[in-house]
Image (cartoon, rainbow, N blue to C red; front, side, top):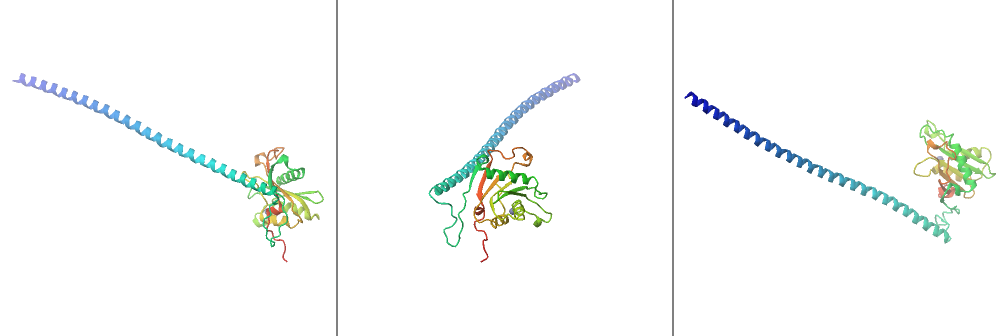
Amino acid sequence: MAEKQKLLHRYMKNLSDMEDELKKKELEKKMKELELLQCELARRQERSGTKCAGGKIKELRQKKLQKVLAAYMMTLEGLLCEVARREARLNGDRGRVSESENLPHPEMLEEYTVVFCAVGEDGRELLEAALSARRCAYAPYSKFKVGAAFRAKCGRIYSGCNIENVAFTGGNCAERCALAKGISEGERKYTAGAVVAYHPDQFTTPCGVCRQFILEFLHRDIPIYIAKAPPPEQEHCIPAIQDTDEVLVTSAYRLLPYSLRSFE
Ligand SMILES: [Zn+2]
């Protein structure tokens, strides 16, 4: 009897082992399936991620293209305006601001841009004097250095720079500094002026107060040359203004067509 029980035990154990083995195999199979599913999931996620990234890149590219296009359109509009202006000039329109008899603007000099080497000697000399004066600018607060120069009727150049003050209103602009030097030496008439300052995107023209100040000493329109000074790290390079640098040639009356002219 005991022998039979022993045998039964062994059978049971074998059966249990076999069952374990089957379970193990089943488990392994399930694990493999799970791994495959995980792989597939990862693949799909990656694909959808790439799709998202691709979409974003496309969107960014489109935005960039739109920006470039907008810039081109602006340039085109500017060029069309310039063409219209030049055509009007060719047809005898000297660019009067108004036809009204109550706004007696004097004839204004033309306004245009030109490369530095194409500016007349008078303008080039003034721009260089303004740039030289700019090196003395005292601008510890704004760090915005400006140089200006004006040619007096006698031919002499008076230059100046901006001078700031801790009490801001005590500061002075380069244009008024230059003119004050000349006026204090008895020069009341000027034939041309120049202003230079560094700004990466635009020309720096005189402020409103300086425009009115300049007009105080004019009996006729005078050219005002505006150039971009080189960036601070290049300001000691020689020549500081390159031949191909753009210069805006405007005029005193164009800068302030509606100036205060009389109290009477
Ligand atoms: Zn000013």
